[in-house]
Structure formats: C-alpha cells, structure tokens
Length: 328
Length: 260
Ligand SMILES: Cc1cc2nc3c(=O)[nH]c(=O)nc-3n(C[C@H](O)[C@H](O)[C@H](O)COP(=O)(O)OP(=O)(O)OC[C@H]3O[C@@H](n4cnc5c(N)ncnc54)[C@H](O)[C@@H]3O)c2cc1C
Image (tube, protein in one colour):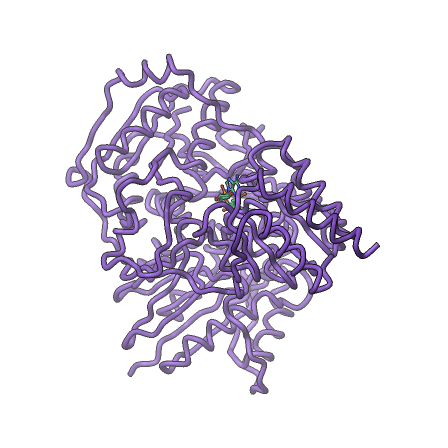
C-alpha cells in the first residue's frame, strides 16, 4: 500500500508551547493506526521556530516552520497563501487544521486551490480500505454524519477534545525553518483585543448556565435563584442568550467565550452544540435539564432531566433549599 | 454597492428526533413533518446587508437560495425584511448536498453579475459546516472572512472593516478589500421581524428562477455515506418520575456527591 502523506498545520502566533496542537498530533497517530502514513508538521506564525521545535521533538514528526515577520499578523488568508507552496511540494493526501477561526477562513479557498475535498469539525476517523471516513456532528449534535472524500486529497478541521495524544518517547523529527516574506494581503488585521470574559466564571465551583430554552430575560431570575442555592456559584449563558441581551457577552461559555471547568455545571435549556460544549467539557460533573429528550446535551451530561424549565426550576430550587436547611 | 445575500431553509432543530436506529438513507434524517424556517445566521446576514444600505446607500440587495420549490419561503422572507430581489436556483436536493455543489451553483450565478459584497450565514444550523461561503470565495478568487458580527465601510475606499470574535472570546478587527465574501455570525443587533404587510407584498414579487443544469453543476468532491446517533460522551443517567420526584432525586444526587 502506498504511504499516505499527512500534513498537520499548526498556528504559532502566540508564545508558549502549542499544547492545543497535540490534538492534531493525535490525529496523525490515529491515521497511522490502520495503514502506514508519513506525517509532517507545517507550523506557521511569529513563533513558528520555537513551536516547530517543540512539536517535532515531542511527536517525532518532521516539521517545516514558516516564521512570519511580526509586522504581518497571521490571518486565515495569509495562512493559506503561505501554506500553498509547501503543500504543493509535499502533495499530502490529508491536511488537518485545528478548528480555529483562521482555519475556517482558509480551508475552503485552500481546498479550491488544491482541488481537494473539505470537511470541517471532524470528531472521529474510521479506516475504510485504504481510504478514511470522517465523522462530524450535524443538527446541533443530534446526529453524526460520516463523509467519504473519494480520491481527492482532503482538507480537515478537527474539533478540540476528541483525539487524545499519547505521549511516548520518540526520536525527535527534523526541523526546517523558513522565513517567507509575505506579499501585501487583501485582508489585514487592524486590532486584536483580549477577551472580556468574567473572571468569576473561571473561579466558580458551580456554574449554572442558561440556554435559549430559558425563554425570556425575566425567567433568568430562576437561574439566579438556582445559582444562589450553591456556594461559590456563577451564572453563565449560551451564545444565543448573550445575543438576545439576556446576559452580557462576558458571561458566555463556549468556543467564542469562556472556558470553564467547575465541579458542577448545570445546563438549563441548552441544546449542546459543539461550540458550547468546547467551553464546559472539562467540568467535573454535568447535569442537564432540557424538555427535548433527544437534545445533544444529554450525551455530554452525567445526569439528565427531561423537563420544562418553567415548571421544573421552581421545584428544584425548593428541593435544594430544603436540602440546605437540613444541613444547616 | 451591490450586495448578494445567500440564504438557506433549514428545519427547526427541536423537531429533529434521534432514534437509536439510524435511517438507511442518510437524507432520511430530514423526515416529513419537520418545521422549516430561514437559517438564523442568514437572517443576521440579511439584516447586516440592510443596515449597510441604511448607512452607505448600497444600490441593491439580492437574496439567493439553492433548494427545492419550498425554499422559496426564505427568499420571500428576505424580501419581506427589505431585500430588493429574489433568486432561486432550483435543485432536487437530497438536503445533504455537498457544499462544493451548492457553492458552485451560487458562484456560477454571482460570477458575471458585478457584486461588491456577498454575505452568507456563518454556518447552516442543520449541517453546521460553514463551508459554502468560503468555498464560493475560493471559486470566485475573492478574499473571505468568516464569523463577522459587525462591519462598516473603511476609510480606504473599496474596503470594509469587520469585527469578529475568535477563540476564547478575543476580538479582532480586520480590513478586507472589496469585492469580498463575509460569513455573518449572530450578535447583539437582532434581525428585524418583517411586518405582515411587507411579507404579503413580498409574496407578489416575481422571482428569478434557474434550474441547476443551466448553471453547470460542480463536482461534489465528497459524500455523506452514513448517519448515526452520536456516542454518549458521559454517562447521561436519566432521572425519571414525577416532576417533584425528579427535583428531589436531582437535589439528593448533587448533595450525595458533595456538590451542594
Ligand atoms: C463561529 C461560532 C461560534 C459559536 N460560539 C459559541 C459559544 O462560544 N458558545 C455557545 O453557547 N454557542 C456558540 N455558538 C452557537 C452554537 O452553535 C449554538 O447555536 C448555541 O450554543 C445554542 O444555544 P442554546 O443551546 O442556548 O440554544 P438552542 O440551540 O436554541 O437550544 C435551546 C434548547 O432549549 C431547550 N428548551 C426550549 N424550551 C425549553 C423549556 N421551556 N424547558 C427546557 N428546555 C427548553 C430546547 O429543547 C433546546 O435544546 C457558536 C456558533 C458559531 C457558528
């Protein structure tokens, strides 16, 4: 069987170990489980040299680092432009990115340039003869689809948390450092601002999170009362709740909001889209309340209750308060 | 400025069940009896186009959809909100059509029509791929930014300044040269609700209708071969009983685990 060539593309705009990229390394290993593959890193950004060194050493895969001058902040378009010549050389069958904003800008146009297929949000890989089938969620996580890419190369984005890297001792891979000088771009980063996520969310031991199922801003009162039943608690929301203005964006949990890992995460009227789950999957215990018995959140919860929040939350608050008065 | 907004008709997620036995044909997850509406992110895209017209006097806003006869609904809604014109590419669609096919049809329509800006939703709520917009941009050779929640004309002519939220809630402002394609993310400015009178009037407007064959369909490149219920990632124990009993069981469980 011919050896399939795989390129893992890691962004290196920020300082420090590119720990998120280890999910990609795990994808490389996963692909190699069923057939021989040649895996290669392409590391792009201001800090590509250090990140490339770390990744090639810790994974044993060879790396090409494209060090981008600091006055040219990395955008998805720049990432695609810099990656194209390297990919044209390596001619990989599989190209994998993490599912980041820049990756989402660049994978579509890159697939067109490489005449490749393109599958986003991959969360599982199955071998199928000498091909692969890629799994991704649809309908807010209610179903999983399995996609085959035919004979073309395929560009993927991989969701965080689905592929676990197993750290074994490996021979460091070789590292090649290049310093491309990017041409003027049609997309320019003007300003980057840090997140204004509420620090209290990260410190809370219990996070009570409201989804659109809460129905109205007035009903948030129930969520606040529920949170008050727990010590060191905080109220958070899904993106849709923040979009509606029911909670400030600083309280949003998920990929474009805060990441929390409390002892208890109480998801109230949240459907369980992966963009939300990314922000709370590190919670120790997850309880979900939703009126839809098929909601995806129940697959990401330790315990689930199928109920209407309007009637159930007052009962739960009462039960918890009674609980408390026993202890007191 | 001439703007094209791409819209899709999607089923309401809450009406989709997950039976444990998957259907034989993947497309059958779109069973009969679903409630359908305009993709929410596309409503934001239409709203963004309308607001740009209000601030800059864009000359024309066209709404485009690819889909079966019924998909016409979303064009009517876009026109009810204020779009000038509706374009329907009729496709006998298995609803899991490859994003390359959809993007190919849309790009074929847009190519010779001198748009300055194309807006799509950041993803469709049903398939969640976020690919039709970026692939179309690739086909047209235009720059593309995804998940933009606000934008305005830049001081430079022929460019926009776009705001978006990226990983961890960080914010970015980016300038993009026109013509450009943006995919629109939900945000704090809610899409307007069309007045009934406007919706009724929109029902009488003629639509431009194409069959997919006339637009040279592109190669699909990939195919959904199976659908299955997702795996249980945590235990997912269901608490059963009357509402009162469930509340007590949940409270007792949290207490026994030292969580309250
Ligand atoms: C680029 C991008 C980034 C995103 N980032 C984030 C992010 O950071 N965080 C985030 O949360 N989302 C994010 N999203 C949005 C995400 O895809 C989902 O749309 C969102 O998480 C859904 O929010 P929800 O669960 O509150 O609402 P819905 O999906 O509408 O779900 C509401 C749920 O409430 C239930 N319900 C309704 N009424 C009741 C009732 N009376 N009692 C009990 N249950 C009820 C319903 O059954 C349903 O399951 C992002 C999307 C994109 C495209």
